[in-house]
Image (cartoon, rainbow, N blue to C red; front, side, top):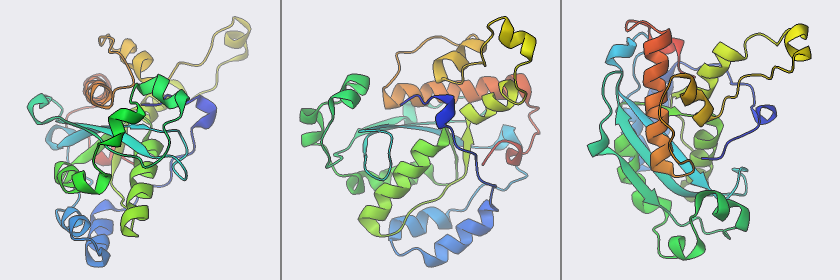
Length: 244
């Protein structure tokens, strides 16, 4: 996972009616894997958090620009509000078909030799989409996973993908960035609360995990959402209060 400066965070768009959008996409999808994914349907907006099946997802990439960079690894961890299903977690390294620049290699440790023999994303797409079917995707900064997966499929299939997301970074921003710091706080040298994954976890007394491994970061994100729900939301809160 790449950690972004607050200035890089873009405004979250309005949330669509996911059930209707999935129905529309199922009718128009040309790839059989995408059609099956959409026909599985989206979780209803009024579903209480205690009943929502989630899947945390994290990517490592060659850079931050989805228009020119590519995915090099994917980690997914299914869970719900009470349990993390580590036995169903998956991790893939995929060939980005792009040069591995030194800066990204230093961050995630995935080298050219590791991706050279790795499969193309299309070869694991069926398994990935089956793991996402009927679940709400959870990420820490949704622009990365949404944009990179959409761009990757658009390049390969000439059609993109959409999916509902709970963004743990955005939830932390609601809590800690909703009001600007007062002049007195700024004069005292106080800084806005960090929205990074590790710093967000620390606020809930969650353990430190070594960052920049897709599977570890997916697990860290799953645990963070569980903590956020336990601290700030009632079990009967509808999923529509969290997703985007």
